[in-house]
Image (cartoon, rainbow, N blue to C red; front, side, top):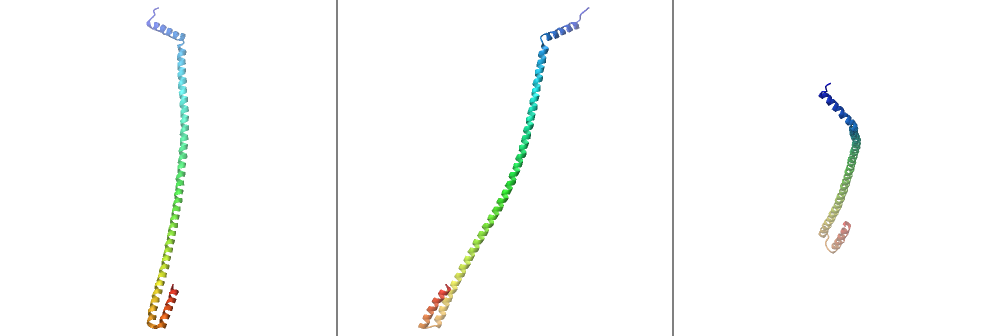
Length: 161
């Protein structure tokens, strides 16, 4: 029986495997693979947990975004209402101011008319008195006429004033 190179390689391989079993290399390799599997499983669980947390955070931020948009819309609506109220108030105050100024102008005009009327009456009375004095001086002569003129002039002044 002749033993070729293949036979010796097979015997060496079997001895190699027996040594590996003897020194429990298979247990070490299996333990390393199990540790690696556990590490990968832990990483996957951590990734799933992070994904759930990120989804929760995203939902929370989307809810906050919706709430912020609603709050912004309510602020804008309130600002529009405030602006409308302010506009109406300003218009009302302007109309009141215009009414007061118009009333003041009307009062000043009425006062000016009254003063002008009084001045015209006073001027007319003075002119009438002077005209009456001239007419009476021309028609009434003598001491009796002069006394009567003076008396009537005094009466006219008190009547017109």
